[in-house]
Image (tube, rainbow, N blue to C red; front, side):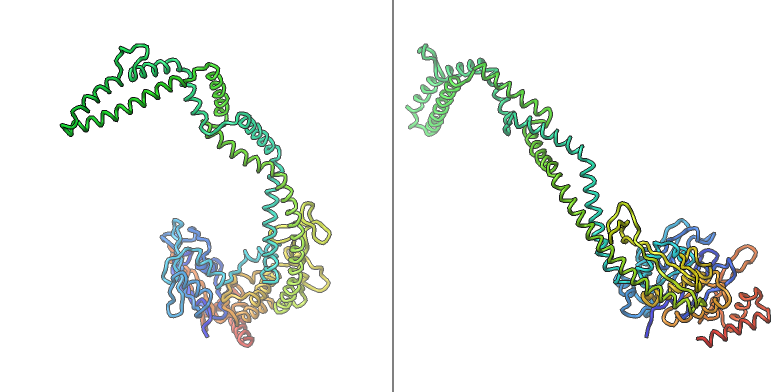
Amino acid sequence: MVVTVLEEMRIRSLGVIDDAVVELSPGFTAVTGETGAGKTMVVTSLALLLGGRADPGLVRIGAKAAVVEGRLRLPAGAPAAVRADEAGAELDDGALLISRTVSAEGRSRAHLGGRSVPVGMLAELADELVAVHGQTDQQGLLRPARQRGALDRYAGDAVSVPHEKYLAAYRRLRQVADELDELTTRARERAQEADLLRFGLGEISAVEPAPGEDAELAAEAERLGNAEALASAASLAHAALAGVPEDPEAVDATTLLGAAGRALDAVRSHDPVLGGLAERMGEISILLTDVAGELAGYADNLDADPLRLAAVEERRAALTALTRKYGEDIAAVLAWAESSAARLGELEGDDDRIGELTAERDALRDELSGLAQALTDARAEAAERFAAAVTEELASLAMPHARVSFAVAQVPAEDGIEVGGRTVAYGPHGADEVELLLAPHPGAQPRPIARGASGGELSRVMLAVEVVFAGSDPVPTYLFDEVDAGVGGKAAVEVGRRLAKLARSAQVVVVTHLPQVAAFADRQLLVEKTNDGSVTRSGVTVLEGEDRVRELSRMLAGQSDSSSARAHAEELLASAREDA
């Protein structure tokens, strides 16, 4: 059966490592070496392959770029294989090739299965592939927020389902509270705005302008202001066309046109051309008669009343007062009135809106109170199981009398939500404060692990927590960096034994300085630094047989050729094989 396993990494120009190949075991691989040799570069390399932050300062001096390449064996249908296929990556005989390049200038590139991909794609795969745990993670576990996150992760759906409901209500409550706060704090501004709108609408309503009225009145004022000249011109034009009744001798256009028409009518039968002109002459005569009639009517109907002119100018002044304030013309004024009436309706409806929001806020607080309690209950139940499982693991790590527990408590607050008859603080994760407690021996009071655990105890609690996670939320590969810090003696042997047990169901890579831990490994890698006088380099070697005994001797006594250390190293290996 094919399982997911990281088979190999090649590291070039990263830190002190010039060019090295890291061959990893499907089971338990221990990475050892002198302090400063570059063991942590193995962790850094894997972090880069999994989309970690690219630090150009890690590029080896004199190199243009650092390159990390990895070969990952994936079973068909694995989530990571499906996601890689969706990204267009190709598997090489069941293996997925991953590479990450970091230039000295800070540029970063990623490739997956021979295809260039965003670095974020590697980070997506990381969640399905590897759990990396180092001293920074160990320190992070001291923070209550991380402890709450660890508990929630362990609880799974039992917490995540009520938390999703809680979070939806929480976000809606924040939206309602923000809108309500804006409406209430801006009440004076809204009242002033409403007063200004009412005043403007009142002025417009008092005038009652009609669409296009300003243009019509302008034309009428022009006509009334020039009534005498218009009447005189119309009379003269009419006399020229139709004649003057008081002077029968006067020659007018109508008489002359009539004479011309009669002359053509007399001979039109002799020539079609003249016949056509005669017809046109008749049309002109009709048109001329109509114009003369309209001129006579215009002059008769022209209103030259000065009172009417005064009324028009007064009306125009009223309209001009509106256009000065509310728009360049009456059309714009009317548009302003329409939009302002709508805005005034909104402002006048704010009181109703405030009432609606207040009712919704109170209902949401009641809902959130119940959801927060459900979340607390789910966490408390999961905390008991989690603490019992971690306590059981600590018994396997030379802490048989230690007891781990969780304190799950709702945080009181003056301004919060009421849960169970008291007011508590609430946030996006609920109203709970979660703290991991440790009683290292019988009779000891449980204390927060930040204050109640030594360095070695904290390392073992961290390992126990991760082993529990491995059973509830497994990933194919676990990488532990110095997780055995502060541990020695029998406890170190138990840590090694527990890591070996974990490696039966997952790939485990441990960067360690303890020979008791390294002895349990299925494969041991030595990171070794060399110096030719001008350049310092580190390489990675697979240790077998005598070489492995020599390295364990160095780790035990600081001397690889010490006979007593060698005997102890051989004893460690033999004991580890028996446990396996």
